Image 1: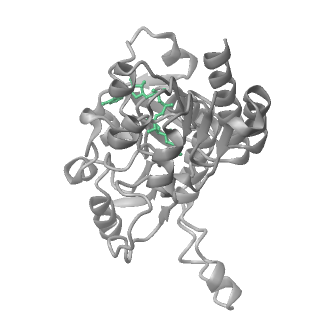
Image 2 (image 1 turned 135 degrees about the vertical axis):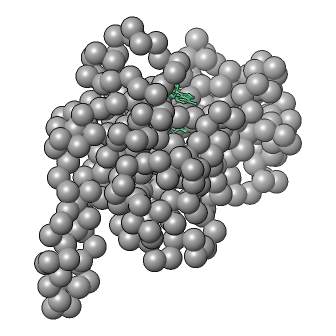
Length: 311
Ligand code: NAD
């Protein structure tokens, strides 16, 4: 048995795989993702291929996996994997469902509080003797504000529970989740249409997969319908939000703040799109990546790969 891991994975989980399959049969190189020729050669005879979100498991690379039976995904979005083609070749695709949900939920609620307060970008001013107290005295509190969750699956639900814990009211849009599903009551969340969510929420946070129906879901027209001064947070996937429209809405004051963790092209190429945007947080696709989440995600996938190949 041979296992190939092309992106970073927690060391203890890699050791678990080495114990199960023999150290010489586990090829772990977090830089392989950036070496297409070496990667294609490495996967040619592997039985399981473990990736994060950067390795594109499709086309030539998928064709190079001549005997793999399992694709382990160290995360949940499957937009970097041609799942249909994998399944057609008899490969099982295993995501780490739920294992990084808490990391994303904490990012969203913490960032929402920070962006509503709009008072944390004064470090260099204060250190240099300036005292912008009046300018930073109009921040908004979070208790009593409304969060709107677009997509109410594993991350949306956990985000809703955390938001309730800091006193927010929760509305969500997820047409696949029937109105009589118990989770609405368990999370004290109201099921609403997308139009109502957009017009009512003080904070809108996206938790949908990138699929045809969610591409450009938050375009300029939809962003224009958001409540004046609302906060928009995208930890879902790039391409769901029109980032240039977000930047324009921040500059005009229509949006009160925004956080964008995911981009259509990652790493984000140097860009002037965000120049002059107030109260904007850009992060490099880390909402779901914490020390603890990496341990949970990695151990879940190691165990699943072992069960699949040895069970
Ligand atoms: P999930 O499958 O549990 O939930 C997704 C929900 O979206 C489902 O309930 C589904 O019914 C709903 N949905 C699908 N299409 C929709 C639409 N058009 N409108 C409204 N709802 C729709 O997935 P999850 O674990 O909650 O993760 C959600 C997404 O978050 C992932 O697909 C991934 O892209 C992203 N994610 C990002 C990070 C990060 O680090 N930034 C980490 C984890 C996940």
